[in-house]
Length: 215
Image (cartoon, rainbow, N blue to C red; front, side, top):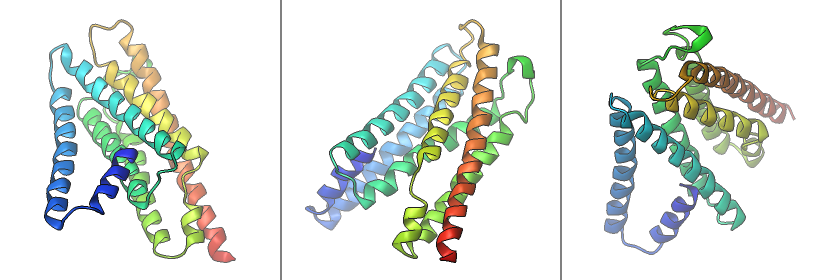
C-alpha cells in the first residue's frame, strides 16, 4: 500500500483533474471490494470461508509490510504515502475485530465468553481513533510535536502481535483443523498482549507530547 500510494502520487502530478477523479474512484472501489470480499468470506459456512478470509488478511498484512519496507529501502517516502499506509492497516484490523466480535469462538481454557474479544477490540479501536486524532493535531502544530508521535519500536511490536493474533484466530475458525480450541486460546492471549501494547504505546506518545509542550 505504501509504495502503491507513492506511485499514485507521482502520477497525480502529471495527469488532468478528470483523470485524478477517475483514479481516486478506482482506488476507493478496489479497497471497498477487498473489504467486501473479506466480509462475505467471513460469513461463509463452507470449508473455504475461513481459508479465504485468512488468506485475504495475511496477504493484506504481508503486502502492507513489504510496501513499507521497499518504500523505506528505496527512500521513496512521501507525505501521501505516510498518510495512506496506516489507514489501510487500521481499516483491515478494525473490520476483523468487529467481525470476530459478531461470531465469538470457544477459546479453549477460557470457554465461550461473548465479551472475550470485545474487550481488546474496544481497546485497540479506541487507541487507533485517539492516536489518529493526536497525530492530526500534532501535524497542525509544529515539527517537534510531529516527531514526538512518529512510529516507534513499541508501535511496531504492537502491530506485529496484533496481526499474528488475528491471523491465528481467523485460521482457527476452520473446523477441519485439529486443536483449534488451544489455537484460539493462544490467539486470544496474543490479542490481549497487543491491546496492552496499544494502550501503553498511546501513553508513551502522550507523554512525549507533554514533554515537548513543557519545554
